[in-house]
Image 1 (cartoon, rainbow, N blue to C red):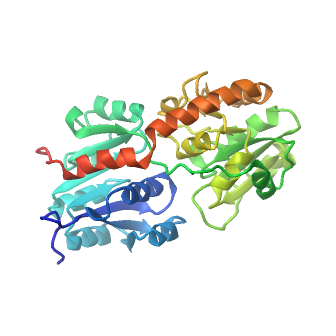
Image 2 (cartoon, rainbow, N blue to C red):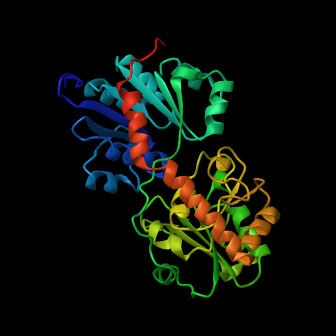
Image 3 (cartoon, rainbow, N blue to C red):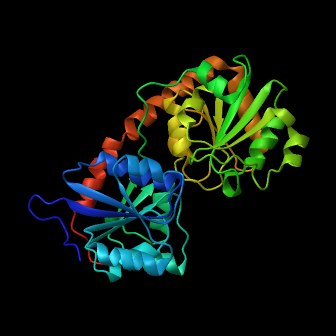
Length: 361
């Protein structure tokens, strides 16, 4: 068995546990790992399923180990002699870490936790919690899943680009003319992200407005979302609704959007919103869970009620029709994310959390 680190001059061994290697949690885990001092920490990602972000992690020098199923997960954690296990999804990793006697167990909630028996059990074996967004942190406290001294509210760590891509290049990638008005949506085109609400909102806007939805998890597979099939798309917007499928060039596409619309029901602070703000794209989002953390109504963007395509279309239309207001809000949003979402800021928090003494649990 490998010996644990943490001694004089030895780096701490950290395991980052994911159910699948795609989406916001995977991006957050690797981004945060890369922000920490490589002489002070070594990182291994343990994942149940491969995903579109795995190649990026390996190119960045982060080891990736597959552990499909809770028994394999327990075996890998038990054999790894890790100083810290930081789970980003589910409960199995925390319970396995506790059984293996891992000195420090950390968990990140990306959206408000549910008061399930499994979550309550895992919470008792968790030394520290990180909550993406203030509403996520507030719910965890209200449910009694974490005590104040064991909880830190954080923002997503996003490596903001040094330079934004060009609008001309973005429109070429999208296959749309420079003069068109384009509304973007980013994320898995199913379930809680509500692509159907996005589509219905686009259908309410004038004929010159296009809606483009891209899944930012990477990978080559293009697909129409299950609940927004081809017939649905043709009835609503026809050629004005464009489903790009999974893309790994979101940063290059963002400058081609005039507005980014977020329609999720229960997200934390969306990574797409941070990246769009960094690219100067005006934001429209919902009030569900931590959307208001990044979008302050009328200041850094506009907020709408979840599941309301008419309200969403109205907010989008306002920004398209009032470009000076849209620019003012996008500048304020950029300042807000630049102040809070730098990975170096999260690395300070992680260093304290990883090296702090665990309270009795």
